[in-house]
Length: 614
Image (cartoon, rainbow, N blue to C red):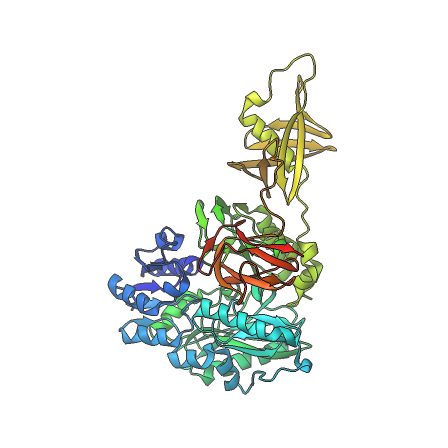
């Protein structure tokens, strides 16, 4: 039996596996990079081993270092999590060669399925080689890994070479494997997958379907089980294909077979030889712990002949530190507080006070609800997200709530083009108009001298300025013999952390939390601004500023100070949170400054280049 287990991953993934290990009485070992020295998963483990460095290629992708860490810590098994090394056959062999128990499928099955090109060949599906206009649009896709890295949609042949180059670079950085391939891109399809579980005794379970159609940058945002609205015959066909794929490679453990469903037909995408991020919805519907079952299978136990019966519906939303309205730009900073309502499952790799850095994926947490029916589960998740206390960098929380309540989603008519169609309306800022007033009154209540002494002659109104949803708002309020007043609003009470206002006879309470100049008023974040802003500008015309913290990974060939550039021409590539972002020339002109070079880390707002127009 397994006594001590190392998880070859980080964050939410490791924390999730550790939770099951604690329940089973298995000792836990974490590995951590230098930025993760104080991360939640590092603190949760019984033992932690440092992997020197920061980049995944130097730390979490170093299978040799992880095997040494397991040996040094006395672990007798390694769980790869569901990322990084989970689909690396060489790593699986290294684990087994070291005499450790490998929690995953045989290396031969990983080799057959972990490469998407080989998986398609196994099932008789050939990738595109000579792409023509008739094949467009196409998808450039990394052969290894997942999570949307190394993917590019190409709609014009002229864009294909650049897409191939960018996908190779991103795949090599994320997975240590730059192999990519091209396949047809079916627009407006649904992303449906089947969870499989197989033991060493010949039993293979197909644990229902999941719909993962709501995606950004080919990464899933909202997932649910079972996939709604599928005809029974199609569901049976998906299950049969998934089981056939598993048996074809003598699969063992947990895995996922993914399909694109369109016009009542299913097209095989890939088989992921690992547990998926979205596995909690399957756990909720089938009443199982998939990690516990993985461990039992690795210990040689047999599955029951038939899987348990599915009950109800489950929905999961991924909370990301990102700004959907700004091209899904990842965000960094201090996560001050994260709590969800009682009865809601929260899987996270962060806790209050943790810093969100630039080196890894910006996902903060997964929030999961389960109910007897789909409408009830969707309603419960939207309500839970609204009531979640989330203080820190900008997130996609508002987008998730609106997505769950969008008519296209509630009626189960969504597909992978959902955000392409609806992102502008889903990200239209509609903050509570009274949130800035509540912040001003709470701020005044925390420093009573701001009110000033009451006098017979009316005094000038107090003025405060805030930035909220990208706009500046100026607040005016007065202190009279009857208390605080503001135009059109009756102030019932004002305390440092709670303000009660009444408008048109409707009373509302506002919880106010302050972190320096940052305020969170219920679900509305805002920033206090100086009363007299600096009228000067510090940015030269044509300046290109870093949209997020990150690392400059590449400067375009032939680009240097003095170079003539065309509008839209790529100048450099910035990597942040495992994604590469291209910085292009805003106008046609001359590059007059390029103060960065490959390998340099930059903060948000740092000057990357200056282009002076002709």
